[in-house]
Length: 173
Image (tube, rainbow, N blue to C red; front, side):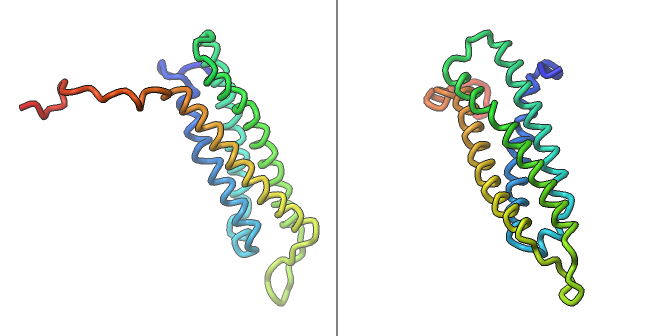
């Protein structure tokens, strides 16, 4: 199930979802923390996005393990390092998803100030929002570390090789 799609490793496809969605989730989490107006506009989109991101992270991890088995230990130390870092990311994504849902539910249960038309955050919500910002930073750092180690595992040494000369690029004449 997590091996290939049309001969392409699923991992190579799904990691792009994580690379895009995880930083977007982190950004929305920070925006929701800094402004009640933005929190109202973001609403349920944040916990839904965080849930989709967590699911993508799980599929990325499982498909990565499938790809690692397919490599039969030929990936070397860089692949091992990437796999170890990648094992942690889904746990962080699940934590951020749960935290996002808790923040959303606590915020929705916060009474609205009739005069101002806004919700005054409770002490609990303020603590959750601070934890949310810290979680967003941690998530972003981990995505960068996992992504960088994966890129190194795939592309290590290729940038140092000279580009091929000539050979059908259409500029030969």
